[in-house]
Length: 199
Figure 1 (tube, helix red, strand yellow):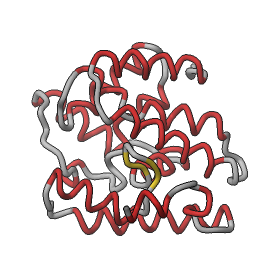
Figure 2 (figure 1 turned 90 degrees about the vertical axis):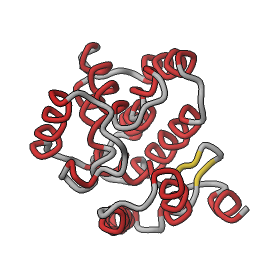
Figure 3 (figure 1 turned 90 degrees about the horizontal axis):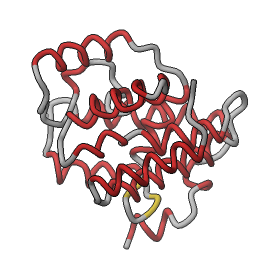
Figure 4 (figure 1 turned 30 degrees about the vertical axis):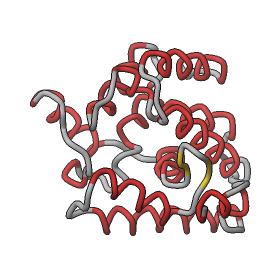
């Protein structure tokens, strides 16, 4: 079972009402980027990509948290039978499948940490996981941006982590893989990327 666009839009609207913040606009831009890129990828559904992008941070409904939003989002989606969306609530933060590469704080119980550690290690990623990972780095709350702009934005807020450079390299690798699929730079599909990146 998967949510439709109306389900996802309603879920985000309610979540944002529960915990208002810039994360809502960020989620909308992530969803739009996913939709635009998936539309150019053979075998991918732009509708599904949009929905999964829209829900990736849904765990923020529970309040201002760090890595807890990952497990909160997972549980939120699993309660509704949205298994792929649930996976992406966690997988979007781990382009490298090792929980130690997290840049956030694990404000979760020991039990939840161990669950997430195993989940990340065992997850089978597909192009939807990788697309949301990429688009999470192509979207600020104010619009689309180049990867480097988002890299700096996140690092200014979370600080430099031992895995920071490896995460950047992996995200660039994912970007290059999608550019081979779509036959152009991803930035060509994202309106306003230059203006939002350099202002």
